[in-house]
Amino acid sequence: MRRFSQVDVFSAEPLLGNPVAVVHGADGVSDDEMARFARWSNLSETTFLLEPTDPAADYRLRIWTPGGELPFAGHPTIGSAHAWLEAGGVPATDDTVVQECGAGLVRLRRGERLAFAAPPLVRSGPVSSDDRGAIARALRIGEDEMVDSAWVDNGPGWVAVLLRDADAVLALRPDFAAFGELEIGVVGPHVPGAGDADVEVRAFVPTMGIGEDPVTGSFNAGVAQWLAGDRLPTSYVAAQGTALGRRGRVHVELEGDTVWVGGDALTTVAGEVAL
Image (cartoon, rainbow, N blue to C red; front, side):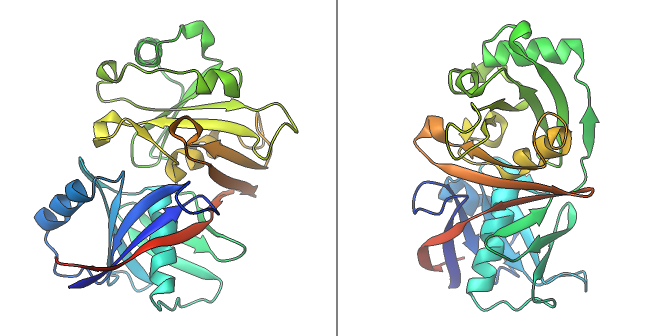
């Protein structure tokens, strides 16, 4: 039996964020067993905590969706760091946790809430006209409704679309059958001062075995690397999950060249799992 935690991420209130399943002490669990458990848990991501192979890391993390393994994902990074610390993990540096994953070493800072340093984008830049057409069809909108678009891929494959406002984001009714291999995130600004969030975000990932991801750290990191300090402030809060009955809040801060993506985390299920 192995220790198990299910952590609600990006919400200060239970059951309103994005859950991640975390298996502790997973050294010795095979790839097939990890994949099978991720399909069984049926969450957007399931993670496995292991001993690091890099001496600079505090722990190693493997991240699985029901459809396969990811090199990096945001809410599993925060949720797994929370679970590791809660289980008695002691980082080499008091105010920083270093995670080893498929994307390399990821730093998390400890403060009011955990926040990870956004990893470098593996694909960035403008979107081709053919891809813009495919994205518009998948989102069921006209290309003229897309204020801008860019690749913001830090591992999962994200392409980002900026819409005119938060209402346009919430009105989307995507055609998941038209996505193909696309993983599309959208962002639109809220009316300034109208609430506790500056932008509304949605992320659509049918390729990962789910339709819409409730709250997405990796996509928010990519958006910030694209827009923070330009079309968005250097410090802002993103709302996500509204369309799914969640209340995710992602806290983003640009410091120099580093984007920090933070959120609250709460353990909602704790126990043991037979693996």
